[in-house]
Length: 321
Ligand code: NAD
Image (cartoon, rainbow, N blue to C red; front, side, top):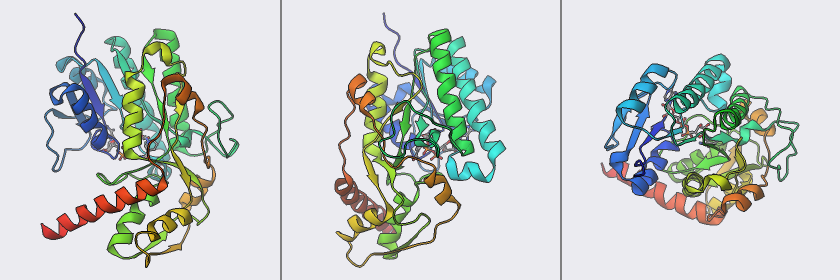
């Protein structure tokens, strides 16, 4: 008899977790998904929730046993911009939590573990255009260094202990359900709210800063597809390059102006410009395409149209409430 899939998500109330949770509930049933976070849900209706600081190894082990967990999706992390404000704190949270997840998964022989990486694992010495799967990385932010270290540790646990660890290097993620948590690509979400609320936006990156990006439904589909793929297909155990879009703030503004012709954008680059300048402008994800069939669905125009529609509805509901 096969053991039923029972999933624990760490950091599950964030930008990725709140949407991945819904997808996993659809896939496996809400009674099999334990959502956890260091903070409590505000207005989410969640079947199974426990507070968990993922740096607390005994509590993590207790929850894995109590809920008969077979897989962990480890999303708790401090992202790039927040990480630069307190580097040692970010390093501690990102590394301690990930090693706790790997250790509990090894000890309790969990079936699979998902730990996302990021384009931040690349650095200024990396080829900027069509960044290959394997190349010089040399990240320059504490977040990027922690993501690269987690990639290396993931591959180590796979090779040494046979733990089925899978990972994607997410590009900047664009979504309307939950606000982003302090990354360098957050402008590509903020801009939609400001466009609809104020008709103008002051961008913290310069107009021609190209970065790899993805609309959240593509990122969630990629995550579920990666985790569902047969283990033999997963020949990349550090982390897969993954991409859908590459655009600059000026191009995104132009795409928004197709819907809101009076929208204006101005630029006031801050410390995040330096972070963005150290990252790839576009990504080669041909290895993910070949090994488990990855294909994005959303282009810039489709993403912008959906974002405007959903955020307009969301803002209207706030006014009506
Ligand atoms: P987020 O900041 O929106 O959410 C992170 C969640 O982790 C928050 O709900 C926070 O409360 C929680 N958290 C923080 N410290 C914790 C701790 N000690 N224990 C438990 N929970 C804790 O981040 P996200 O955008 O949802 O990112 C999820 C994962 O995806 C992260 O690993 C991140 O590095 C990766 N990623 C995200 C993006 C993006 O654009 N959002 C891009 C690349 C990679």
